[in-house]
Length: 157
View (spheres, rainbow, N blue to C red):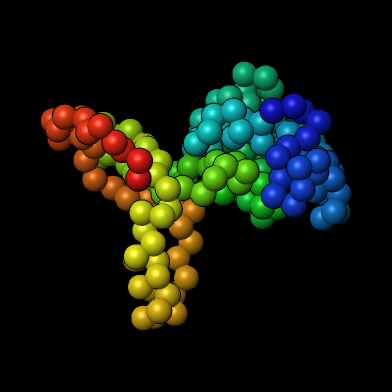
């Protein structure tokens, strides 16, 4: 990701500096580095983001990373989900929304289209008036490899 801008849902040419200025905040090197780390890593815990940022700026502490991730989420630039009992995992908002599949055996995280939950989402909306935030959904189970099952020809879920 270029350091001059980010892919923002409000517009393709909106830079991090512009998003921050609109909220009366300034662009700092730490904020830029944290956002770039999330985009580079794909799905990352605050500790993983801190490790990546520390390679460039050793003086950035973990508290700064946590605060920056919270700010970036408030700004709508990153989202988090819980893929384990530990820290949340952050990813860029510009990615297509997806449901996370987390293997309890090996810890692998896979992604599937939110359409796999259409029936459940529609059922909860009609029966309870409940709107599911699919971007925060993580399903836990056992992957095919850990279960010892052969791969299928089509996995287009």
